[in-house]
Length: 369
Ligand code: AMP
Image (cartoon, rainbow, N blue to C red; front, side):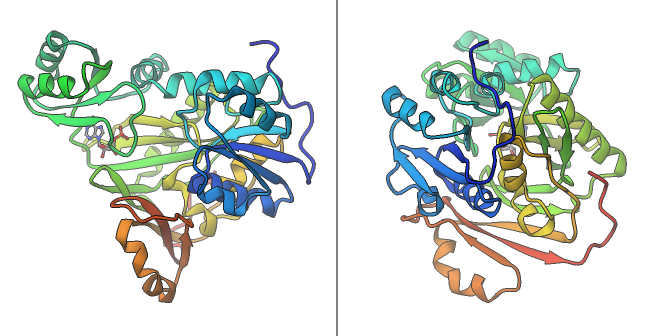
């Protein structure tokens, strides 16, 4: 690990940040980098990747094509990623050539739900009760310990509710593990939460830390529908959410923006659901409501710049534009607010095609970053 490159000085304007992944998050990172005079080079397997349209350069390649990955890294001054399932080996290949942030440690813990939950627990933070499950017998015995209802999730490669089933009996737990073909899984207790929230935060290479106001997040069919700020958390809960993000970021030696998805219990407790080692859908409202958005903040962190001002200047509701809703772009364009369309070539059911942020005057002073 010691011969991995690290930044020795902040990147000057004109330098190139490489981004692994070319979806909407990569696209919004590239747009934010351009505003700071930094160039971007996107690496993605999809030749129609939305980020290609707005970046200085792109390479169309697979993550296991190490020849292409290395050539890409040689053309960059620093590299980051827009999604967490980049293979560890790809990141290592690049890290020998130029600095990669967030680093391998963040990926190791967030690519595996069991490792992630154990890591969170070891930090003294709360999560739903959980058990690792690989066999029918484990599914049965773990379900018996959970008391009533659970959610079975694949250990790896799950997002937006993919690779998970709600289960209400031992027989359903066994059927779910069979549907996963007995791939390693995690059985979590079902949390009867009051609402969901998230905290989007950033850590700089110098150990500095900044966070945004935590939004309340509403999901439909496991996909984020809208994020609302202020999120309705109490002052104490906001402070606790920020402490949770800081604790996690420090333990991961993290550099960049991360999001922590939270369940707010009916008793007011904050349970960590998931860590996203990247910019996050629930932080899109920061583009219009804060001086420095989550995207610019991430670029600043990976470029070795000082973190920016995260103060919120407006209340905001960010709504995702999903699937066919994007055909209605004319009516979104008429509404007061900010329309973002991601330039995806094809509409598919539930696909994130864009988002719309409506702003209104601050109803109460935001909590300090
Ligand atoms: P995840 O892929 O783990 O982020 O889960 C997607 C969504 O499923 C979450 O945002 C929740 O709405 C729901 N969910 C996941 N895990 C649980 C759980 N243990 N209890 C209740 N709801 C859950």
